[in-house]
Image 1 (cartoon, rainbow, N blue to C red):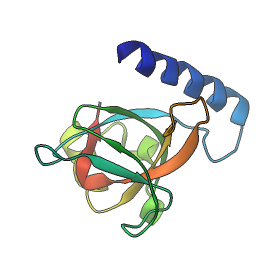
Image 2: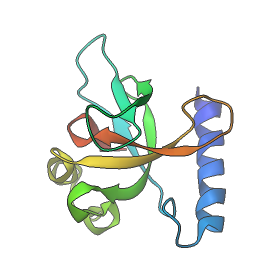
Image 3: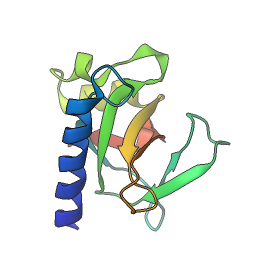
Length: 120
């Protein structure tokens, strides 16, 4: 699992470098947290509960965030705040992730609900 996360981080960093001003140009590590026992956090295609589910992640999974959240919030703008404050600011927003839901090297963006993530 650690090797897979490191590989994902390396790919993300490479894409970030080559993406320039594209949608996936910022990567910040956050992790899945506070999901009820036995459940997972759904990553969705668009920032809405009714949107197609791309993948599901259990508590502790480290996610690569693009930095973009609904409501115009940018994770880089709040990165200097304490972790509890960052989590509070994203609690009722959807935040964009960069992930490989099919685990085939085809990375895409998706969205997770902020109530279930925290800074890593």
